[in-house]
Amino acid sequence: MGRKTGEGVPAAKRRAPIMRLLEFAGGHRKLTVLGCMLSGANALCSIAMLVCVWFVLRDLVAVAPNWSAAPNAAGYGLAAFAFALGGLIVYFAGLICTHLAAFRAATNMRAAALEHLSRVPLGYFDAHSTGELRRVIEGATGLTEGVLAHRIPDFVGALVTPVAYLVVMFAVDWVMGLVCLLPVVVSTACMFWMMAGGGGDENTNMMTFMKNYQDALDRMNKGAVEYVRGIPVVKVFQQTVRSFSTFRESIRAYREFASAYVRLCERPQVAQLVAINSTFVVLVPAGILLALAAGDFAAFFSDYLFYVVFSALTTMMMTKVMYASQALTEAQDAVERIERILEAPAMEDADPARTRTPVDGSIAFDHVTFTYPGADRPALSDVSLRVPAGATVALVGPSGSGKTTAASLVPRFWDVGDGAVSIGGVDVRDIPLADLMDRVAFVFQNDRLFKMSIADNIRAARPDATRGEIEAAVRAARCDDIVAKLPRGLDTVVGAHGVYLSGGECQRIALARAILKDAPIVVLDEATAFADPENEALIQQALAHLAKGKTVLMIAHRLSTVVGADAIYVLDAGRVVERGTHAELAAAGGLYARMWEDYRTSVSWKIEGKGTGHAA
Image 1: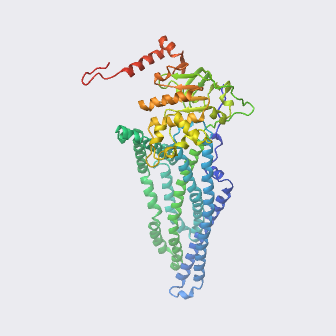
Image 2: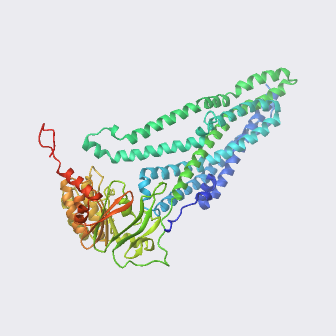
């Protein structure tokens, strides 16, 4: 059995989301605890302030209209002011603590995700677009930052407040306490109803909703990135926005999903808002009934004023609980998304005890079987092939036959499941990753350039290259005409000030990069796929220069590019079905011969003339 790629964070070892957030905060987690304690202290100060306000009202009512006979009122007023000011100071001190911890947690979370992504197989990025990953990392850290900085301390304060609130309410008058508790109970029930999706359907509960909501946002973000990248195609071929069906469908699906959930939450949300804002609706009639039965109206009215003062606290308290609960749900989903990135299997570097140096640039596949993560069938099954050092070997076959998959295993974009891929007699997993990357240059059919100068794009292959070496690579890749038309030549930044290159021109710049790298092994994945005839001719010249003295493994759909290969392997459904030179395979009458005949027919087909209705 083949060795397995390194694992990320095991799902079984996941901690609770809040505990995981605190872990990301590192040494700053103590500040979060301190901030929450200060938030609780602020809640107590708020209760104490309202109690002091009630004392002022009670004393004034007791001596009305002789206000001067209430000497303690001024003291209670000063105490209320002191509690208000102290609570404000404590609250801001708590926010400073939680913000410091939140910023540290967000920074560590981004760093952990990016550091782990630097160690995952490069093939991982084929299945996870840059737009999707960027949204997860930036969106998740942004959400969790707000949770740690505001929502958690607010939630602690919101928990402390009702406890103190209930104690004080029942201490003054238990009957009025029960009356004021009724809106809180109804509001809480409505919140649970809403968290369950307006009807308790397990498919519409808040956690499921949050997951679906974030999934919808990820799909829209991914579709938006693909749409922007495809704008040049729209302009060239005069297509419309409707041609980008994935982007359009992702927006439509998000709209329908969000609208449906809003409808589900409509009734419980309305009921919750009515309940929490209708304390007076309950308090006034209850007060009238209890006043009629009260023996001492003045004493009753003083107690009644207490509940009038405290009723304003009910709305604020329940609103904080609602928003804090929603934020915690969002944070849980965000942490789980970050965890999924951290769980992606990491690429293990070569074990120093087994590290060896390849003797040459030959490539060998020995009974290789590989299955993509999540796939139900192998992309390659028991594939064996040889590419001698300095030889050019081509992989051909129908779409989906496994050609690109096989080529991606050489630079360890993925690791094999069974069998082994070796270079110079050494398993690629026993070659240090840095050394392996130095030995392999690859040119893909959809190479993209970085938003930096042409020179820096080429220098990416060898950062220590001199200007002269870059210019030599440009000439070898037949890029002189590209550089000549750019406003600042090699120093022109791609993607800035309207400077863009065609697909064929991007391929030639990528070839210049590969030529500069001067690696002994070259992997070519249909390097002329997006080139027009003029660019294709120049690319073929550049490829001839690149392949001199190198071991070349090439994937091609245009069979004319593999006619001169030293050997051709024909793949079908993940298996090698034929092997030989072009002449041998063309004469064998197998799959390659049929593909060659189809290719010859397609390139020789032309329209005879206007109105003839047939082809020659």
